[in-house]
Amino acid sequence: MKLLNFRQSPAARALGLVSVFVTAAALLTGANPVGSATVKWTTSFKGSDGTTYTATNHLLPAARGDGRQWLLAWTGPAKQPAPDFLAVIDATPRSRTYGKVVNTVTVGPGMGNEPHHMQYVWHKGDHIYAGGIISDTTFVFDSKALPALRLVGVNTPMDTPCGTLPDAYQTLSDGTAYATYMGGPNVAGPCTYTNGEVRIGNGAGGSPGDIVLIGKDGRTLAEIPAATKEGEDPAQCGNVPALPQSSCANPHGIAVREDLNVMVASDFAEARNFMTPDSPLREELARQTVRVFDITNRTNPTLRSVSKVHDGPRSVLEEKAFFKESRVVMEVAMTNRPGHKGAFVSSMAGGAVFYTPDITAAAPQWREVFDDTTAYKKFHPDGSVTGGGDNSSWLAVSPDDRFLFHAVMGQSTPYGKPLDKTTGMIYVLDIRKLLNSGDRVRCSVDELREVYAGGSERDCPELTAVVPIRDTTDGGPHWGAMDNFERDHRGMYRETQQVKRLALSNYFVAGSFGGGGDHRICMFDLSRAGKVDLDRSFRDERTGQPCVNFNRTSWPHGDYGDSQPHGVLFAVSDGNLR
Image (cartoon, rainbow, N blue to C red):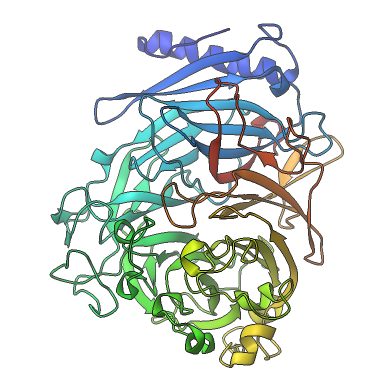
């Protein structure tokens, strides 16, 4: 067993760093410096709070070999005390260790971070940004030596006094990242942002949240207010306790178009007041708003607009307003190609997808273009399962702007239907006609029949695939990742605009209603026509069953038992990526 400790002088630290990369290079090329034993080493980073944070690799012999692609899974234990970790899974098709966990990178010294999201897509040279939503901490990893990872930064609660509950990350071309902080300031009262503006918040986990620009070393480069100066409608933007100026600013999903100088964030909910099983489903805490920022000045974005999505025809069927189409706008996804300016948002409690053709407009206009009920009807033809309260989650547009991918957890216990019937799913929409309509979009789900059959206008998205994901726990498939890489005949990788695989994780948040999941990560093949099939060769190394199951006794770092994977991300060893 090899241990490299970086808590040394600068010179010794530099030598240690060289040793790490030499060791990692040896693993990648097939040489094993320690025979068949696990290779272990620790890197560390001293945070602004004075704590020395650590990341310890535990590489198995299966990590050896060249030409590899990896799936990273940001994971927490099902039972404490046990460390949180990044699992590195062999995601190279036809590899003899395909689907095997080859490394676990445990973080310390604290436990119970509740690992949540990383960035949506990884590009060559990017650091990995991994957030602990409960600990209010972001860990930053260097990924050049994959399957090994090196801790190079930590953003602590002290670094973000105006925001808590870090959720999603969007990396920029310079390697920094914007992050959504869904909850209010560390301490209730006035908080001053980097640009000198002040907002009053009701405390951690409350309102208003903010946006944080994080450097490659984990430092906060800017805390950016998400709340308006003048406040918002108190009837819709409830706060507990109430604020002098009501705010719906609880940003969750985030998308960036640097070519348009635009950042978009979708508002979720005042999380601390309804994200536990016994919380009342209060309508005024379920956000319906989307925020658009001008990011011409990357360190001082300005809030350009706050727009609202609206209820649709299914609202007449919902007994509780909390489950109407517009409620809890969880995720946002932007188009990618020049000439396209559209953006999508999805509602977690409402089970609907909305679209605006021009996110750069002064006041974006949203229209419902798909109801999850249409997808459910593919395997519940009687229409008995609707999108209301279906916990719709991950949303992504393919790099070529051809498809929209959407993961749905399924209705959970509070919604009153059998869990074996209200299962989760992944579905795919062909959005080319919608985007080709430009600013003259006609598609609008505004009649009840369209809830069950899809929009009737010619430019409405076409449902190309629905795959039910049977998870009878009180949870389901929440997060996903697109495989944005392809391999050539020489074994080298490059980024591609044509996605051929998707990965989904079945877990949300511990203690929340509908959050448990069955702790599997499944791989899906995507055809050029938008058809989706479960990759049955991506099998658990112990059970031999499709999907990698994180319910197990042992891990490379020890016998810590069942674990809960949340964020997933495809990445490639640096030396094998053009």
